[in-house]
Length: 447
Image (cartoon, rainbow, N blue to C red):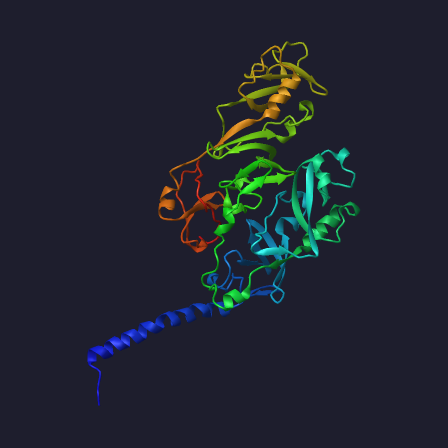
């Protein structure tokens, strides 16, 4: 009888052992995925994860959270209550958490459902909630919100011409805005809307993708924000670019082919974006019309993000002024009396109130031939702000083939297209990064 040499037996045993290790390891990993997510009346398996269901077992963006028997899901940086999951039909019923209470106190922002993942059910439709409107131009019923004023809900684009801002919401097709009051709108939003998931389970069952290595979501940040003549990428978000693709203070909105941005609770029209010089040209929306009817309030720009460009200047508008005093640049507004615009603060003792405006540096208020129309033209021309940039912060991340992005306002660096391998970058508090890169942002809750 022939016997293998002892050395050959040892080699054979080592080969046999290591040949089966990957399989054994894989089975051990997959064993974690037999557990289901459970919270209140919600039970879910793949493609979801969360709770006792390991993050390796589901799609990165479909992490479920449980709090007091209430299930929630974060999509594009917006939290939703999960009212129902039907895994047979691959559908979800969702309601924005900020729409579960008073509508007027909710966030007046768009939520982008990634089109690669979700499709709105055919029994629902998107409507636009418009505000900062001229009510005389709209011929249907509106709702009154204390801080925002009148708001209107419509699915007819022709009605948007009389409003400065808006956002979309999902409601049943049976909902007719002009026949309801605010309580009806709130009730409809609390009941949520239905979306169908576009993940093909068979791709996973036949090995095209592994549950342990699901498709990356980084590709969503390749899309550019596009609206009218404005195109923008990182560090901006909005439109097709989810929130995590940019800094939270730089979310752009598109309405009627016009781009806008909200800064310190004030709406601005965005006339131009130059990503090479990192500048924005802005017009305060309420100062884009007749000056005397605008709200006379000062707006502030977060200094850690914006600084006024050297091509623009801040001026002080004084109003409710003494009629008996002579002012170098003075206009008369109904109900406000003499209004003076100045580069200095000399008129404080003659006027009861004041606020600041930003205009091009070419505008000199003390010139004698200036009138109210010239001031309005200067305001309509807009002013430039520079987005502060720390060019060096992300170099190490990019050098290591990582991807720079934000988790809220915190800079992160992600490796190998994996949201589970994101590390916080140690950067100065007063700075954040803008760096041009084909995939430049990712959001992650896994720290």
